[in-house]
Image 1 (cartoon, rainbow, N blue to C red):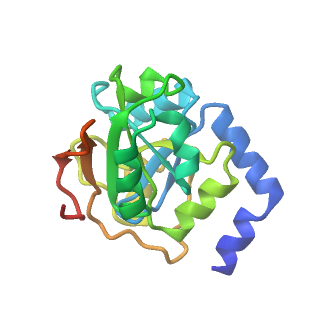
Image 2 (cartoon, rainbow, N blue to C red; image 1 turned 90 degrees about the horizontal axis):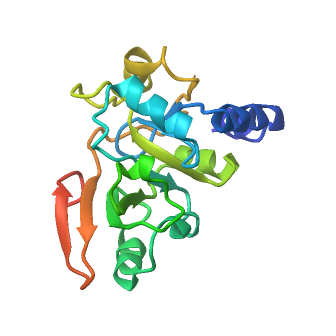
Length: 201
């Protein structure tokens, strides 16, 4: 924990990290579910690199993750039902898909009018977001497409470590190894399960 505190409170490191991300960098990190890849939402270069690193189908969107829902609200259209799901399940292993706002780039959403949002229940990820400019990352799992999602630092390093700009250690905050549940929230408050993951609804 002290090592984590030191690295994320070291201004020279966080300045370098933010420069990497602003220049189109891609980083890898632990979450509460599986290991992730991330770039800044406004970085098309970073998003393109994620798709290239993974060999990911461009029809599959990235999701936006943060340490606080207030950082995510600008990227979605206001919806009282979405807020109720956020209040109940965030932070946690639920990804909510809802209508995107105009500021959310279509290169993140694969041209769709919706975007997925989540706040992982993982102290390391939350602290990481707190020092990143904008406090939001466009993300996906840290693995080559059609291969198993990385569950550990060693798996992430082996799978994508040579292609990204930085792979953070987990600092003891391990992933559970099961992906998040993904739901689409309808305008009437009902939801549709798009992927069954660790949370059962």
